[in-house]
Amino acid sequence: MAICFGLAVWCIYDGFINKDFIAAHLDQQGRADGTLILNRLGGPILLLAALGLSLWLSKMRRGGLVATDQALIVKKTLQIPYSSIKQIDKTHFQDRGYFLLTYDSQQEGQRTIRLDQRDYDNLGPILERLIEAVSCPFFVGYGPHRPGSGRSVARARATLHDC
Image (cartoon, rainbow, N blue to C red; front, side, top):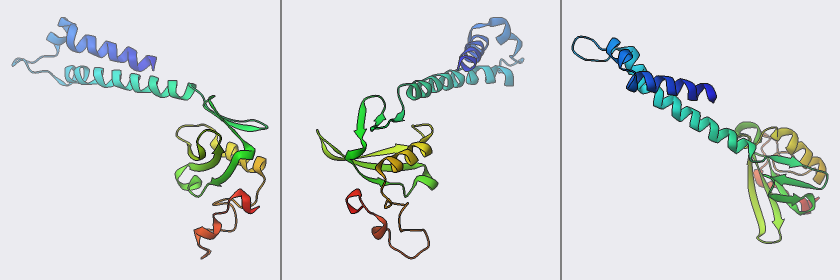
């Protein structure tokens, strides 16, 4: 991030402010050569890259996903006790990198959240920890349904009440 920001400042300075650099990279007709064009275009692009990278890093630092002995803590604000989890749908975990977690919330009733590998690091072990903590053999994408087995996905969708 600091490298992108430093290069952006350097390119913007050379491309727009440094008169000697600008004069050295103009031809007889006053047209910019490749180096000057690169500095004029690359500076703002690198500045946007530094901004995007800093936003992404701040998003990653804001909080994560923690599986404790009693509950799953999402972004340090949402605490989901394992006893309130009703369904874990990991049908798309292997190919798309996310799973759906349905739980009972005291304030909002039954709620489903999507936990994605783009938002949280180390999601595979967290999912395994959830499965261990809830200890039910019938999960979506985990239980009796195997791709290509001819069984319907509806048969594979079991909730924790079916245990």
